[in-house]
Image (cartoon, rainbow, N blue to C red):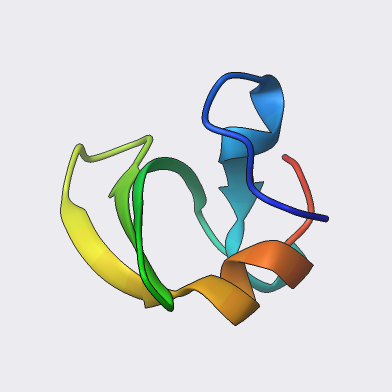
Length: 55
């Protein structure tokens, strides 16, 4: 599912069972994301974010 920063699709769960995160920005083939529980920010492949399910 494509990442849309204007809808709830910006919220995902890593691998379906990992921590929930919010996509903050799409930067080429990567996204800048923030873990919901800890506010830690990280870079993540866009392709992986697109297949991660919504929490």
